[in-house]
Image 1 (cartoon, rainbow, N blue to C red):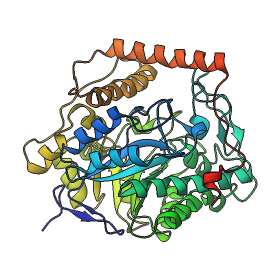
Image 2 (image 1 turned 180 degrees about the vertical axis):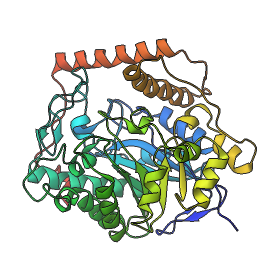
Image 3 (image 1 turned 180 degrees about the horizontal axis):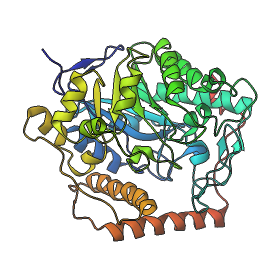
Image 4 (image 1 turned 90 degrees about the horizontal axis):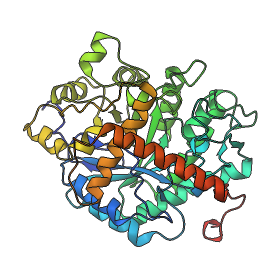
Length: 423
């Protein structure tokens, strides 16, 4: 029988996905003030799980408080057992598999979180309105500590009932910063040629596997490229993918871009070839090239909207799993409808104010607000105002920055592990 979005998929770990549609990670920003999963976050995932998606991947769960992408991310520190378990139960209640995305923002940690971010090298972000401080280079003990924290976070996710984790190695976050020569100027074993630049990611994967065992799914989200001159290239991405396959990764998601070049939003790297436009997805051409390098299951996210294009991508072998993000924030029941053949495509909802830089901010805010509505027990509202959402989001961000400045708060990476991590 020809594979389609309705066909189950068994990953190398043994995890069975009931269909080939995945809810890709979106930052929910719905943790509590101290970083626990909130009731709103738990309610959101119960609602998303009712939509018929084969795989749910959470938004950023942060392995160190100083590496948050937003102030209300879930933090994988301390004791989180019951709240994490409630989150996993809600997500899995209707048959979906669920992976927790583990992340650290590195230099993309905003000032509202810390004025002392850390990164592979002291390379700051450009043209971001002062929202990000120049990072401090990580020391070797700090790198070793972060590797351990990824493993500990994965063990916490496993104990809570999650089916696996996804290590975020894309979109310009910390792992991606190690991979890119634009942001990694190190001269020690974690820098230089690609072998050194990929060392941090491979150590994180190895520690995650050591902390959880073979039956636990380990996925990686990897940039196909940085889309910046002198940055991480497709050829390097293929080489990293080969190393990840050798390390026993169970699922590789293909994405691309960073805060400076947001190709993952579809605006920085628009499809130009007719064949790419016909396939819809932003990164499908790169996934086809990746097939030349690896045999492990692939997931492609970004741009998919029609059932026909999704099925074509699976049948031609370009991807094994189709990732959907923004469409599910407005139509949470879309996956089940597509699988059952009840609809042919996601409904288009243009979210823009015709100013490119503002549009990227607006899309994050507008879709995140839809997630918040579901967390509050409401259905999404496609009529949610664009300008009002944008202004509220910008105002909130700058108020948080001013508050952080007044308090000079933030969390620099600990130089030594806490007692609970010492083992």
